[in-house]
Image 1: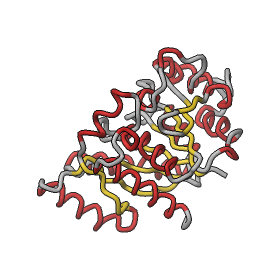
Image 2: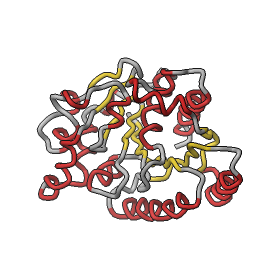
Image 3: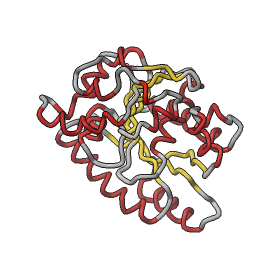
Length: 256
């Protein structure tokens, strides 16, 4: 049975997609069977995995509306060695169209249940807003991975996200829990980064992943080549960190 994890944060630009794509590739390097679900209409995770979002026959949009099965829509990321349920701008229309559908918050959960046995991990890259799409991700997941930068505004947004997860847990998905906080784009030369990092460890304890993802140019360059950073330059500090994070995730789910 696959473990399903949302990569979520209501704040934009915190590295959700970079984390989703590189964690998927890092887990694949560790011989895990992975499906990456792109739930963001921008389709950045799709492009970052090397799939052309402009030429999709079926995507997350059709799956959510019941017009296609995951089996029909998924594609293979040859570079990353994982499967992708791709997305493009069509997905923005799903927000409106799902409003009148039955069980609208659980459309993704029911779709993924049909491929559950095919994977060890299913990662869901959520959009940077608490929308119907994000709600579908949270209702489908066993847990949430929260990537965040170690800066003041990130702490402000974190409390909102934790409250949202608590509400979804109470009303829609009792399996949902916070798996951990991942510190990303970390610059150890900045005193503020170190202070915020220490605050996170103090308040969240074991919920903070040991792995820290450094700010890394090679990770930022990789999407323009349609290749995950851990494949683009495996020796870079960013790639090494995501592979270590993949190993930490494998260990963490053993205790779930």
